[in-house]
Image 1 (tube, rainbow, N blue to C red):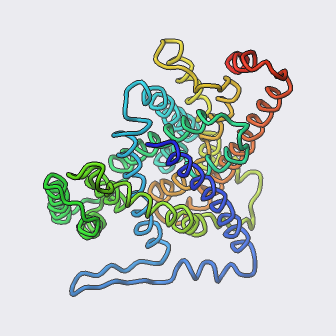
Image 2 (cartoon, rainbow, N blue to C red):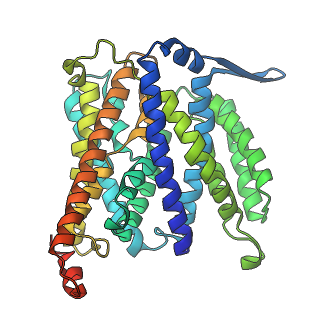
Length: 408
């Protein structure tokens, strides 16, 4: 992936992350104002689509979470495929360390959550909630530092977050499915076969893949497997290269670039607006210390940094990789704190883990408090590390400055 394309991608993600925060703040204000009934009523608006005997009727909130988020997962799938074929994850040497860091960043938050909720079968289902990283939000915080954060650190965070997304997709597919409908699964299999055949036949028209993808989404929705996975499956079928090689535009690149602004500035902020509105009436310090919100918050804040830092340190000691170029251990630690910003993915998995409203507020409180804590702490660590590096640097001693960056 060319450097200019990576730069545009990072800038778009960062701007989208800032809008994500604003949307969440608006939702919080509305949910705790006289406009709360309007906010709740808007999300409960019934929306139905019917073709003959086939009908899909859901409140607007579920159309956002099941429908629009399938488009988000379509983009995630495109990003993963592109990175694995020609980007940061295309070689073992470049993908190894981010993959190890991502693995640690998923295992340790789940362990922290389970340790706090152990013995309560009703709440252990939420173990995967703190295991996810919100790439837009995390890159948005990192972007506030400007050039003070090494570009290599941003690329490492991007690669780690993409691997994290891949892990979240696997978790959703394996652990968060309802009762399965064999008939719907069979039709979904037909849709997958058609997508595979189109790819092997060299079909390059994006509209054809989207049409089959919509059919697949409906089948997966009715099957009991979460419908957003249809977006990932469709993405993996869209070809990166065409028979014309460089003379023809890549269908994958074209669709990714088309969808990215819509997802960053439309779908994700709308998701945040729909899911971040937590009524604070009656909220006490004891509410934050309940097992579910405490497990999520500590999983994000402690589990993520321990997992990312610990697994990375061991991997580097074993000679499996090295720190991003120009980044110190202190800066890497600040980045590891930012991986604890779960937000979008954590809220999404929380909705899958707990059906109904019993734990809805607890999940939102845990995700928001843990994500905000990680964002603030990560920013402060990176800011202080950059300021210290700038103070210690002496004009004209570029080589000495570069060497000091790896000894913190």
